[in-house]
Length: 111
Image (cartoon, rainbow, N blue to C red):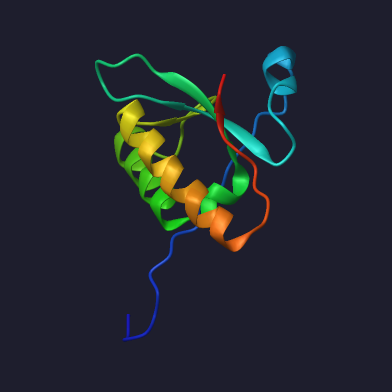
């Protein structure tokens, strides 16, 4: 790459078309996606995050770590292999940054 070019990777989400978890699907607001977070030896927790997070550089780094850990062929919910507290800190940074640029934003919440 030449100077001034940004390195970017395209992540493609393949969402399942079957409706096994209708109750879980209903508790995910439009424009959001459920993910699991937790490193090895730690209980995974479910979070619902706005899809706009997937374009944020910090979240993209988490997706890269997930790719390195699990590959692109994850089945079901996307799993992020980091400590839950670390994810909460990153989520807070993204939320604060988004709130500076927008008067309203979707808050993440743990389900």
